[in-house]
Length: 168
Image 1 (cartoon, rainbow, N blue to C red):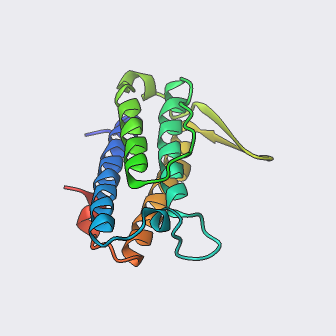
Image 2 (tube, rainbow, N blue to C red; image 1 turned 90 degrees about the vertical axis):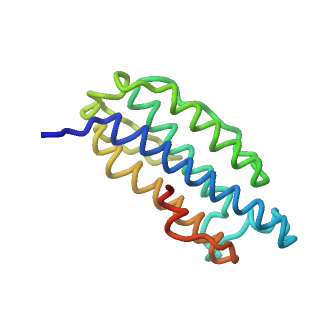
C-alpha cells in the first residue's frame, strides 16, 4: 500500500501550482504588451467590486504556501513587502517563493500532522493541527486565490484554459 506524506501533500504540490501560475503570469505579460493593455489596469483588476485585486490574489497565494511550509517545518516564515506592481514583479515573487520551498526537506515536514499551528489575522485567531491546517485551510486558499487570479485574467481577455491552470 502506498502512503502519502505531509511533505508530498504540500511542498511539491505548491511548487507545481506556482510554476503553473508563473507560466500564466508570463502569458499575461506578453499578451498585455502585445495588446497595449496597461499593466496597472490588470494589477488592480477585480471581478466584483468587493473582492481583492489581482495583485493581492497572487500575494495571498504565495504567502499561504510559504507560510505553510515554514510552519510545518518549524522555521521562520519569510516576510515579503507586498509591493509588486507589474507582471515582472509578481513573477519574481512567485520565483522567490519556489526557491524558498525548494529549501524545505521532507524530514522537516513529515510527521507534522499533529503539530499545533496558531494563526492570527488582526483580532482573529485560528488554531489547527498540521494536517487540518494543510488540507482544510492552506490548500483551499491556494486554489481559491490562484483560481481567482486566473479568472480575472480570463475575464479581461487572456486566452488561457484548464491546461494552463493544471500545467503540463
